[in-house]
Amino acid sequence: MSDSQPNVVVFFTDQQRWDTTGVHGCPLDLTPNFDRLARAGTDVHYAVTSQPVCGPARSCLQTGQYATTTGCYRNGIALPAESRTLAHYFSAAGYATGYIGKWHLADQGPGAVPTEQRGGYAYWLAANALEFTSDAYDCVMYDNGGEAVKLPGYRVDAQTDAAIRYIDAHQDDPFFLFISYLEPHHQNHRDDYPAPPGYETRYRGSWMPPDLRALGGSAHQQWAGYCGMIKRLDEALGRLVDALISLDKLEDTIILFTSDHGNHFKTRNAEYKRSCHEASVRLPTMLHGGPFTGGGRISQLVSLVDLPPTLLDAAGIPVPAQMQGRSILPLLRGDAVDWQKEVFMQISEAQVGRAIRSRRWKYAVQAPHRSGRDHADSDRYVESELYDLLADPEELDNRAGCASHREVAEVLRGRLIQSMLAAGESEPTIELAPAQNCINQWRVSSAEAWH
Image (cartoon, rainbow, N blue to C red):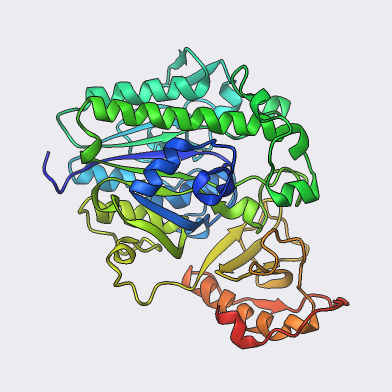
C-alpha cells in the first residue's frame, strides 16, 4: 500500500452528545480511548451536525451534501440512486469498501437493504433501521445476499467483532470501512438505554450536563444507561485500535470518530433531538492518523458536511465539485484564512427549521403551520431562538424578540439567509420574533454579532 492510500475507518455513533467526552470536560472518564486519540491526533472541538435527525444526517455524511440537496430531508426517504457516496469515490480510487451497522437511507423497511440502495458499498453487513431489527443482546443484521445474520454478544461488541474480521481480511489492499453503531441511541420498543450488565449502575447519581440538570426531561431516569452505552463504545474503539496495532496498520489508517446528532433527553421537545440546541447539534469528533496525527485542537466551526471532503482530501482523492462541504486540511496547515464564521443547520420532522451557530451566537427560525414530515423547506419563517453562547452556554435564556438583541438578530438573519442560499435554497422571508419583555438585559450591538 502506498503512502497516498491510507486505510480509512469511520467509527460512527448514534445520538451521542459532544459533552460525554473528556476533551469536552466530562468528568466521568467515559471516553479514555477517544480522548487519547483526539489529543494525539486532531480534536475537531466545534463540530456541528447539518441535520439533527438520523437519516438526513447520514445522507449528509455519505455525500457531503445538505439534506435538501439529496432530498433526504427526513427519515424514511431513500438516498437517490444517482447520489455519489464516499463508497463510490473510494472504490473508484482502488479501495475495498465495507459497511457494517445501521444504514437508515433505504425506503423498504427496517431490515435488509436492496443492493441498489446500499450507496455503492461492496461488503455489506447492516440493517436499514438497526433499532427495529435488533436489541442489546440480539444483534441481527443482513449480509450481501440479504440474509439475516445473528451475531453473538452485546450489540456494540458484535459489530466491532465484525469490523475486526473485515480489517483482518483486507490486509493487502487499502480499505474504506464505515462502522455505524446504534449506541447510544435509545432502544425504540421500550424507550430505554440498555447498557451491558453493571455499566448503568456505575453512573447512577453521577455528574450530569448542566442543561439536563436544569431542565429535567427524561435524563434523570436514562442518563446512567446512556453513559454505560458510551463507555462500552469507547472500549470498542480501543479494541479496534488494538487490532490495527496488532496487524501493523495503525500508522497506515485514518480514523474518523463522529456522530449523527446529540440528545437532549426530551427537554426541548417531546423526544430526543430535532432541535437547534447544542445538546442536539454539537458532535464529538476527532481524526487520527495520516495528516491528522499531531494536528492539535481545531477551534474553528466544522460542519458534518465538511467531513466527507476531508476524508477524500486526506486520502489523495480529488474532492468533487458537488460536495457542499470543505476539507479541513487547510485548517491544519494554517492557511484557511477565509474559513466559515458559522455553521448552517436544517431541522426537519418535528418542524421545518433553519439555524446558524457562530462561536458566540445561535440563531434559529421555524416555518409556522408547516409540517416537517411533509415539507423540506418553506418560503416563510419566524424567528424562534437566539442564544448568547458566551453568556448562556446551556441555552436557558432565549433572547429572540428582545429589543436589547434586535441589532444582533438583524445581522444573524442576514447571515442565515446567505447560508440558505449557499446550500441551494430559495431566499425566504424571515419575520421578527414576537416581542418579549426582557428584564435587566444590556443592549448588544450589531458589531458583537461578528464574534
